[in-house]
Image 1 (tube, one colour):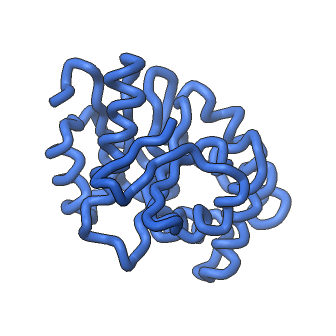
Image 2 (cartoon, rainbow, N blue to C red; image 1 turned 90 degrees about the vertical axis):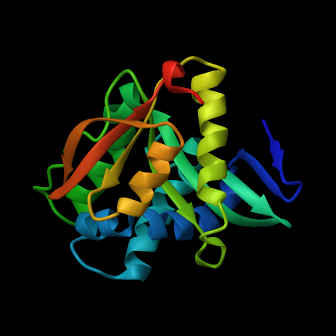
Length: 197
């Protein structure tokens, strides 16, 4: 389903041809986690790692789990989201790849669970930040997942990013707890139908 916002931004499900743009945008959103996966801070290697999975199917970073926002034919933002109940099966190929190529002993905590559709990452092009694209994407997901399907939408926010938390709370998300992920301390926020604004 496509949605037109302000007659310039089109949001749609991603296709495999979007993979390069998605990988770059996801690096903006989740680069720190990817660096922990590969054991070094190297943008090129991190992006290549992500691209390997974005263009593949059946994993948590797959284009199949992404929505993209286009402006004048250019992808300017992406949201990576999947059913929390499927985390284990979607993460399995990623974890196997990490264990094979990077760190055989890496253990990754569960960042989501059954009962929520999880917004894993939300990336907005640097040149487009501050223009409300992140909010637009989240409103779209809220409409699709919460309003139309009655499901719960969840996400994690880093304690060191109060601006993002403020945005999520303004959109109607509520804090439901805390999670640890690869040494990061994160707040768990959710939105369900009773919280819609």
